[in-house]
Amino acid sequence: MLNEVSEYLFPDIFDYENDTVTIILNPPLGFIKISQQKMIISPVLFNTVGIHNLNVRLQDPWPLYTEYNMTLEVANTLPRFVNNQPSDQTMYLNEVLFYNLPALIDKEKHEIYLIPTAMPSFASTHGLQFIFKPINLDDVGVKNVLFMITDNVTQGVSDSYSFKVTVVNSPPFFKSPLENLKVVQGSVRDYTFPQISDRENL
Image (cartoon, one colour):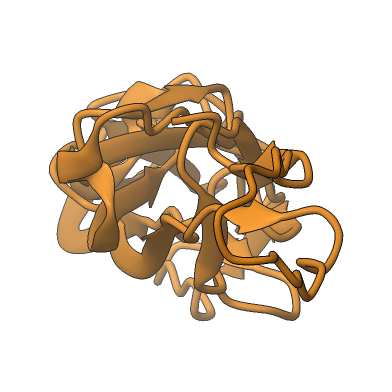
């Protein structure tokens, strides 16, 4: 696993003449050290992720040797949400909504990236945050937001997620009740409506 230290103990080594045997790794890899009869593996660089074909040579001083082949896979896990998945959001037209994704964790402690794959035109991102600013009547309704989470270590590998954002346009309303009026026939009476409010300022 990337950013972890692992040890691999080689099987028992036998030499008929009881000569000192040296273990030689081919190709030599900077993140692997041979110590006596074990291999200490400590990958930290992104380019170590993947499958490595190793040639292990047992060599005595003469030098007689035997070669063995093995593979080593350095894995990298994807970031994941700690507890909660992304949740659907509701907002009003002409408002601004900042939506922070729920807490994420990357086991190997890599930086986590948000990659939007489909979102409405009034949406943008900043880091792990979505910003919604609907201003047009066409923005009203239920919109899908699709995105991926990755640590950019294993190319082409990421997890996809989605949530919905509902943009509401509420009707205008009077801020106070209308009065009941009584008008005598043939007379003129002025009536001022109460103050009108529209939540979206349309």
